[in-house]
Image (tube, rainbow, N blue to C red; front, side):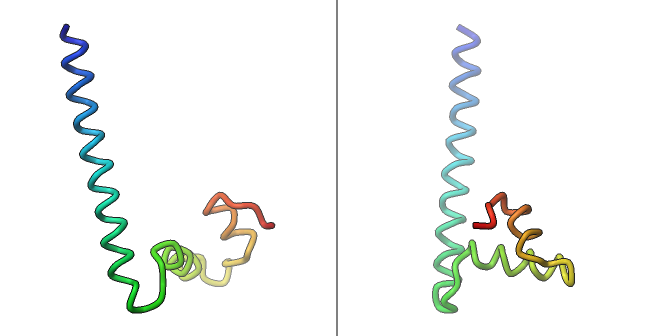
Length: 69
């Protein structure tokens, strides 16, 4: 019975974390909409800025876990 109570408690925490993440995502989308940029595009721009002269397509693809194609 104690395991079930712990599972329910853990599930509630993770559900709250998921809800918070979802709300933060949509808030960021709303924030950048007037600029014509998405949160994903901002992430790439910040990555390029942080990599500086080492910002190549292959380096960016590796960090964001994407294929070059």
